[in-house]
Amino acid sequence: MVTQSLLWQLEQQSSNFAELCNALYEGELITLARNECLALANLQDRINSLTHYIKCMALALLKAQTPLKLDIKNASWSAKQVTTIPTISQLLAYDDNVLLGTKVNG
Image 1 (tube, rainbow, N blue to C red):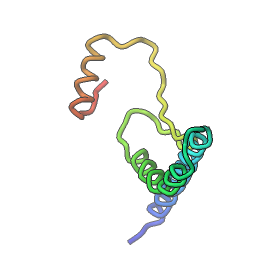
Image 2 (image 1 turned 180 degrees about the vertical axis):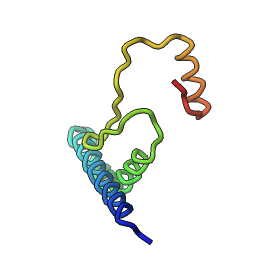
Image 3 (image 1 turned 60 degrees about the vertical axis):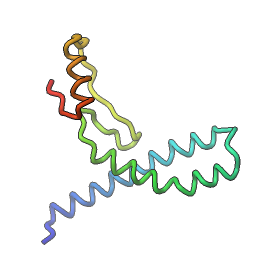
Image 4 (image 1 turned 90 degrees about the horizontal axis):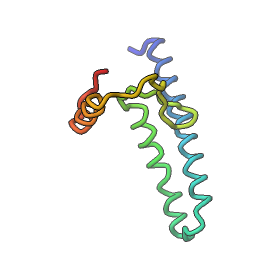
């Protein structure tokens, strides 16, 4: 049974998805418009496949598990800047965890 809170959650996810798709489209269209070397046939192919890749990217961004915050309006990641630089051991631990695909504790 669909509850009112579930409906609100689905609506919010749909809103975030639409906003993120718009930001991704905007960025890609700007990139395509500035590319002077792109032949017309290549441009048409890229525009034709754009919908598929934008939707896949938006879903991946929304599902990503990361300590960074997703900025829906700009399709970018952000995080509060730390006040101290990380130690060498923290950097090495981060690299090891990222390469292994495990969560970084910090």
